[in-house]
Image 1 (cartoon, rainbow, N blue to C red):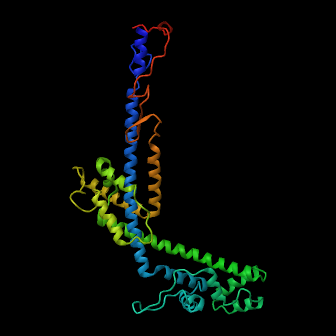
Image 2 (cartoon, rainbow, N blue to C red):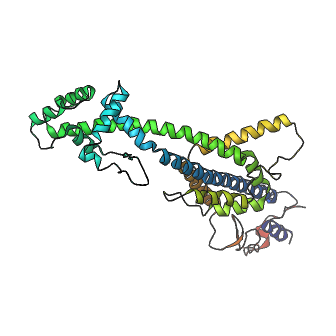
Image 3 (cartoon, one colour):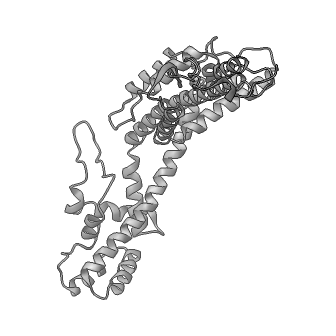
Length: 366
């Protein structure tokens, strides 16, 4: 009976006196603590990224509003065309650009003067096909002589030289020449897009710093709140799982509502007594940490809402993949924990002892 009792102890997870099977309870406890720690870290990261998404929406909406008010896209387009026509003389290039935009093909893209708006709004985008047709003012099916006359009639000397090179390279093929001319315009507009992105990025930096400092959005303080306050972390994670990407219809009111919602979720935002750092450590260190936390938030917001929304989606998939899949005979116990209810599983009955004579199992000497 000693061997049977020993086998029953082993099946139930108890240690035999001879130590033939080490207990795994401590290992299971350590694994459970590690899983809980990993889950908490992922939830804190998930919450931080969610905050960055909402605040990036705010910065992007403010940036787009400023760009629309000052009509930056149209301004950069005009300067880009002027640089294409007269790279050495911007004023002359702008004058020629204004005359070119009077062409019937391009004038249709200009918003006319209205009683509310006393100035004309130039287009923010011009198709390459329309630009080349307006610049040369000729039919695609025109004769080769007409193409040469059209190039000669271009007022800009730099543009004439560029078009002449393209026409000679095309060996008189009108279709190939117009295709190369359109590509020439598109390449120039790529540089204009780079100018616009640099302007927007500078303004985005200024907006991010202003928003972060005015609202006291400290990354370290937010991370601490999410780490220490489990209820706040759970509420933020639940809200983050329902966030939707911003669309063109997202306005400043919606952004303000989102920022207000962050405060309602107990995210430490604003210069209040609740957001004041705790502890009595050196005030110099406190200032350094506060400055680093604010700068880190501002730098994160300059990456843009699309970037952080993509990161949010990846972290969400990582959280979903972190929980082990349930077994067919498993019972749900808790978050990320599946416990089998079958024989031999922790929490379940011990497996049956296989039949056979007692003498077939060596007896363990106590």
